[in-house]
Image (cartoon, rainbow, N blue to C red; front, side, top):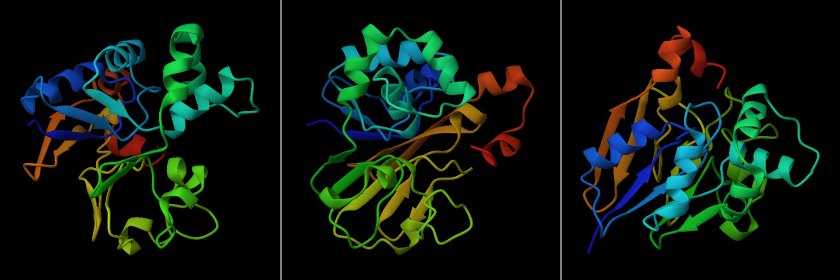
Length: 223
């Protein structure tokens, strides 16, 4: 029996992904699940997608940036950021749309759930809004607000939640939730959690950020 490694937001950080898998001693019997945002912002979107598409051990849920590309490729009205437009120019629609479209909005692991951003406490997973699953940070009418009460501080459901979306220098922790976005693409860490070992593993990232001459704290404030 292998282990399950939950990985924070990748954003095209392919080299860091390989380094994390190596650091975790990822093997043939193991599996890895990303909390979403496989692409956009980072330097190697194609490489990340190609690996996830060809390695059956790797899975991901849908992130807000992944969803934005899918919606644009489908011709749905979508307001794209410059970084999302750059990713669209880089990626071949015919090669990647089927895979990105197939990503689920959550994965049920039995005792745990994996979502990209968050969920409304007390509401069954099948009744959660897609917008909350891919974009939520805090409770209240504005799910993207950074100043209100974080959803994971209130959530106390039966299933433990792994999530990403909201970068921080250290994993975000709630009574029944763990946030694994530690801002790799912004110069922070790529962090994973091995369920069976109850162990965090992380590698340094941010090669793109260093090339741009930016500071991690400057960028995460607007992520």
